[in-house]
Image 1 (cartoon, rainbow, N blue to C red):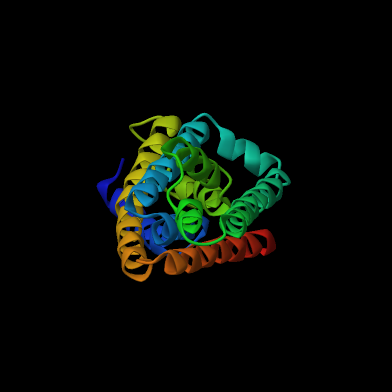
Image 2 (spheres, rainbow, N blue to C red):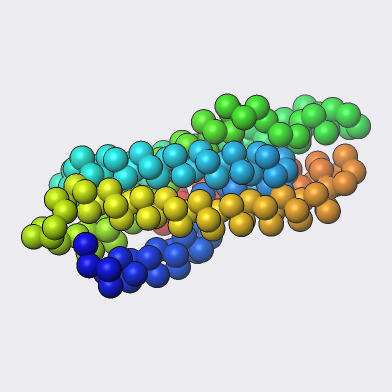
Length: 210
């Protein structure tokens, strides 16, 4: 592939990844409400989701979505619904938590497997990620290039995953550090978890209306 085209793709991709979206805010919410480990686990889950996007796109999913445009709105609404479900679950956990130690337990980190699964689904159902493979990646694929089209899509997708890992890790660490400073008491931890839930609800609303 043309090195200049790769650099151009990288520049555009970094700008897109740095723009707050469902994944970005999902990771920030994890860091604020549940700490560094949960946030970094969420980064792994999101990046795994984009790796799946890459493999599916290389296999022709992007072409299938272009051929059946109704699939994209359906996936977008499914993603919005899933984010709303996560937010409601967080709010219900806080409501059940009461005060004192129970609040800390309700707002504390979830099991690693749960965070991974939720973050993976968040990435898989993220319309921003789907649109990347539908609109941006094809512009940098050349049918007569040295690599087959599937290989080029895989290479560009891998570059996107690396960008996501770098930027989202910084978001995770920053949010966790801020959450650690602001959530030093059970009452503060409860408020941060509520803020995290509201963030996810807002992203779900924006996603559904996009």
